[in-house]
Amino acid sequence: MESEDVQLNDKWRVFCDVNENDNLESMKYKMFDLGEFDTAFGFWCFWNSFGGEQGLLQRLPENCNLRMLRHRVEPNYESVYLKHGGVWNIECEMDHLAQCLNMLLAAAVCEGMGDRSVMAVCLAKRESTVELKVYVSQFEKEGEYMCKMILGAFCEGCSFEKFKSGLEPSPGEIPRVEIKRKYKIKRFKQFQNLKETKIIPEKLASFQWKELFQLKAKETSVAEESLEQFFNTYADYFDFEVKNELNDARKHLLNVEGCCISFKQFEDDYKGKYVVMRSKLLHCQHVMLLDEVSIENAYQLKKYHCTSFYECYRHGKDDPSMNPIPRDPLGTLSCSISVNVCHLLNDNPMMEIKYPKNPSQTIRSLRDSR
Image (tube, rainbow, N blue to C red; front, top):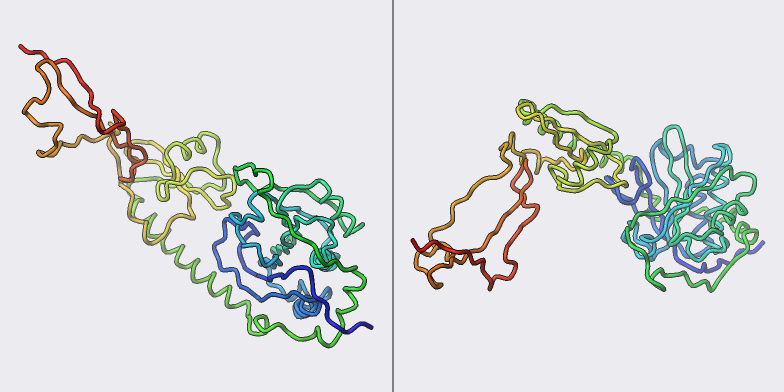
């Protein structure tokens, strides 16, 4: 049996976290870096340390994500390797899941997926479900065929979900992985049971899941304290309703007015809950993203707002536009207009309207000389 290590085509990094979903945009809790590898021995050291096909799922907590990414890929949707791509969601029986994960990981590091756009593989484990995901830099219809070829009869379904970057890539903008080394899966698996692959990676040896759960518990406690302060502060002025989803009218309201706390608009990728605030005095509604509440901003909202929706401000005595000495011929008056539109429940400016736009110009109006 071959015992000499081989260099892989690319370097890979391993991460884990306890976020409630695998979404790279709505992460709340820390991604723990478990280390990296660029050899066959390195890969199998990680796989064996996690328990292999027999013990992987038993060793992982009920809610967690285990991710393997190419070293060049930053774990967020702003990465040039991900922002125009998406994810293949793969369905398989729970009994075959660990075996399917191993097949996908091995195919990825051996560059055997036939697709230079493969950037990451993820296992997303929940209390009742476990999902396999393959992240790619761009959609290619051959990706589904390749996933089914690798997993064979174990694959019960494969669907593609595109990331919503909002931008269409220009020609040549999406980078591709240069493949210099490819290995046959059968040869690669011969390394799995060598004594050199029984060594636990350094970072994994000192890692404990309780570190991530303690961090999650701490941040959850802070979030719950922030919400309690917020609701107690405004309970006399607003009625609150927590919603998992918004209807079309409230989506429109959120897009026009913005979140009361963060001023963000509605986003399809947001996975948190919403708070609908109803004024007890005026019976109007406002929408807020629940995840945006913090101790720092829990007191920044106004408890009511003017029904006229605007306030008047006096000009300063040194304002040159109010100079009593006429600078223009009799019969004309020069002035300019500036209007600031603010959020109803705070003083954050949302829009500024100026006329004329050019500061050197003025508005001229007729003046009655009588």
